Amino acid sequence: MRLMMVLGAALLVGCPGGEDSEAACVEPPADLAVPFRELNEVVAHWALSEGCIQTSYAPDMKDAREEFEAALAAWDEQTCSDLCFSAPVESTVPVDDASQRRVHLVSGRPPGTEGSKVQTALTFQMSTGRILQSVIYVNTAEPGEVTRGDWLMGVGKALGMGTPAAGVDSVMSREQPQPRTALTGKDLETFCRLYGRPTFCGN
Image (cartoon, rainbow, N blue to C red; front, side):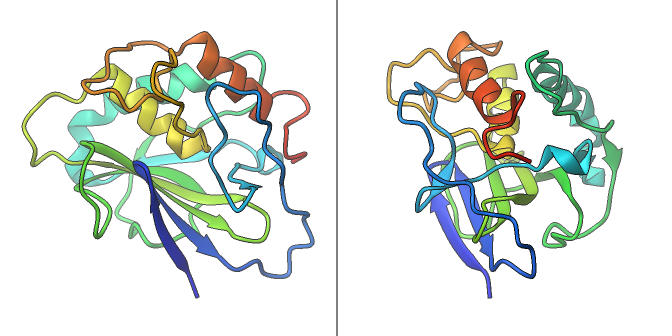
């Protein structure tokens, strides 16, 4: 059975742990201005030991590929980490197919949610926090431009980055319209702590 929760602008879908003996990634650091995304102190994270994260987009988001790819590259190019993304490909694989280890771009919004123009849903193992899939939703029915900051925040949430307190200089801020066009030092401090060498979660 899956557990669904809306936390901020990210929908978290928890899957029971299977036969994986991996230990839970717990006790997120309290000293980060931009927090890790976590539920009951289990940190949401990708396992870098499985190679580059696949990326894809729904056919009706083809025109947004360039912005999507640029936001992926901004996180991918950080030298503190071995995290990498594949080049985005068009995909008709259903959004709820969590067997696809990927970050996937679609139009619309997560079921039962309102609010931000860009939202991110994570599917993860409840027992370990390992992310199985992230889906970035762009509500194209709403007027208004999706800014570079919105794209960066959407990908950041897909990686397990949380929402900072008001006033923190971060692309992950909820301030609207999103005024930042590049990752800040606070963003990179959290990203490098989570996915640096060694990774915070040890995989």
